[in-house]
Image 1 (cartoon, rainbow, N blue to C red):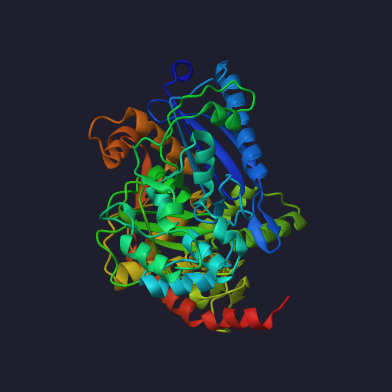
Image 2 (image 1 turned 120 degrees about the vertical axis):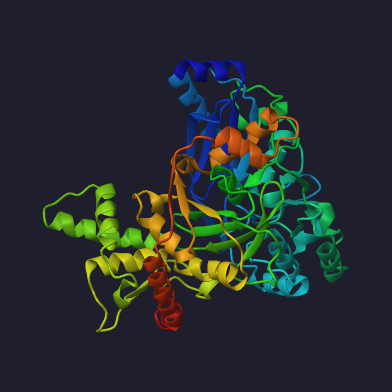
Amino acid sequence: MQNNAKSCIESGRTALGIEFGSTRIKAILVDEANAPIASGSHEWENRHDNGIWTYTLDDIRLGLQDCYANLAADVKEKYGVTLTTVGALGISAMMHGYMVFGKNDELLVPFRTWRNNTAAEAGDKLTELFNYHIPARWSIAHLYQAILNGETHVRDIVFQTTLEGYVHWMLTGRKVLGIGEASGMFPVDPATKQYDAGMLEKFNNLVKGRVPFKVEDILPKILLAGEDAGTLTPEGAKFLDPTGTLQAGIPLCPPEGDAGTGMVATNAIKKRTGNVSAGTSVFAMIVLEKPLSRPYPEIDLVTTPVGDLVGMVHCNNCTSDINGWVNLFGEFAKLAGVDIPKWKLYDMLYFESEKGDKDCGGLLSYNYVSNEHVTKVDKGRPLFVRTAEGKFTLANFMRTHLFSAFGALKVGCDIMLKEEGVKLDRITGHGGLFKTERVGQSYLAAAINAPVTVMKTAGEGGAWGMAILANYLITKKEGETLEAYLDNRVFAGQEGVTLAPDPADVAGFDEFKKRYVEGLPIVREATRSLKY
C-alpha cells in the first residue's frame, strides 16, 4: 500500500481535492483508486466586520497556502517524496454568498458569506417574482439586496462568483463554476443545464435602468462534472504554493459547493437517493425525479454536479445543544471524581436514549442555539420543556435531544416525502452525530421513514468528494457517467451499514413531531421575552 501510494505520487497518478469549510480548510490527496493517501488542513474563523460575516482575500490566500503546505509536508513525512505535481485538482467551498469584482479584478465590497441573513427582503421578493424559492443566502438575493439598498458599488460590477469560483479563477484564470454551485447563485434549468432563461429575463426587467449590465453577463460559465475547467497557470501555482515547488499545467475540474461534494462523498447523486449531513448544522438533500408542485420556503432547489434537480432542507442547528448537555454531564462526572473520556460519555448517553419511550415520554426540546428559518424562529433560544405528567428520565431526556436534532429537518423532509410524494430508496448519513454506532442512524431512519446507510468513508467529507470529481475528470472512460463511475470505481465493495426504520420508532417520532410543531410558539415567545 505504502509503495503503491509513493509510486502514484511520483508518477502524478493522483488527484487533490481542497474544500473551504466554515472553520477548516481541508486538502485530501487520493491515488488512482480514489483512496486517501495524504491530507492537510488549516483552521480559520470568519470575522464579523461592520455587521457582515466575512473572510478577507488574505484569509483565503494564506489559509489555502498553509493547507497545501501541510499536505505537502504530510506527503514528505509519509513517503519521503517532494510533491511537485498531481494528476488533477479541484476546489470546493461553502456554498453561495456574495463576491463581486470590478474592471480591474478588484473586490468591490468585503466577501459576504452564506451566514449573512441580510438579504431576506430580496429573497422574498425574488421568490414571488420567480415563483421559485430564493433563500437569503443565495448570491442573486445578495445582489438584488445591494440594488435595493442603493449600494454604489453595484454599478461597477463586472463579475460575480462564490468562494470556490474565486479560488478557481486565481488558479486558472477561468471564470467558471460547477452546476451544483451555480444553482445556488441563480436558479438553473435542469433541462438546459444553464441558468433559467425565463428568470434571467424577469430579473433583468426588474432591475432595468438601475444597473449597467445583464445579470447573465456577470455570472460564471456553468460546467458539468467531468468537463474541462482549465489548467493551473504559473501564477496559479504560485498562488497555491509560493515556494515554487508545485508545477503549472495541472488540469482542474469544475469547482463545486460543499453540498455537491457531500453528494459525491456519499454516492447520493442518483434519482431517489439522498444524504443527510449532521454536525453543527444539518441538511438533507434528495435527488428528485420531477420538480415539486410549488415553491416551499423550507426547501431549496439546487442540483447535483451533473445537473439533476435536488430538494434541499437546510437547518442551522443540530448537535450544538447536545454537545452542551454532554459537557454538563461530564462536569458532573468530574465533580463525582470520575473522569470519563468524551467519546465514552457520548456513547453512554446515546445508548441510554434507546431505553426511552418511543415518543420521548412527553418531553420536548428545541436545539436552537442560532436562528432556524425552517420553523420561523429568528433568534437562538435553546429550550427544554416538560409538563408535570412527562416521564422525566435520563433515557427520555437524551432521546428528546437527539430527536430535536432532527426536528426542524423532519418538518422540511415531511413536505417532500409526505405532501409531495417524493420517492426515496436510500439515504446516506454522515457527520459527527453518527459516530456513535446505530443510535443517530436509527433515529434518522425513523424521522424520514426510509433506510439509512452509514459508510466508513463518509467521514472523509467534502474534500474527498472533490478529489473524486478531480479524478473523474482524468480517469473516466469514454461515455462513463459520474453515477457509473461512483458505483463501479469508488464505492464498489465499500463497507457500510444500513438500518431500516423501525415502525414503532417511526410512530414515536411522528408523535414527537406533532408535539414539536405545536410547541413552536413557546420558543418564538422566548425570542421576544428573553432579550439577553
